[in-house]
Amino acid sequence: MNVCTWGLIIKLQWKCCEGLDYLTQVAILKSVDMKNSSIKLGKNIKRIRERKKMSQGDICRALGFDRAQMSNIESGKGNPTLATIEKIANALGVSSAELLN
Image (cartoon, rainbow, N blue to C red; front, side, top):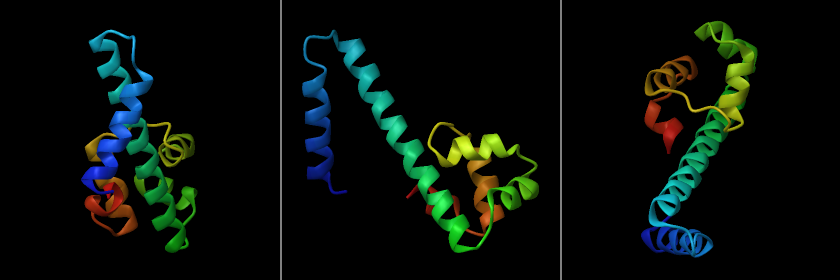
């Protein structure tokens, strides 16, 4: 997305927060952004995993993760640490940047 698109998204999100105090508005905007980032990360992991014809079980065995944990990450419900993202990237044979972009 370009800067103009992000600006429009932020304006729309801010409009939804009218009438709330500043700290509440900031908290809402941060949670929306983190949720979008988690969903994007999960979609990238799943897309790359499927492209490499790997199952969630294959990744979990390689990393020593529980399948529920991997499922939560792929669905955007989990917020993995940077170290975990790096481990997943290595198991998929890609860079962490590719997962985060």
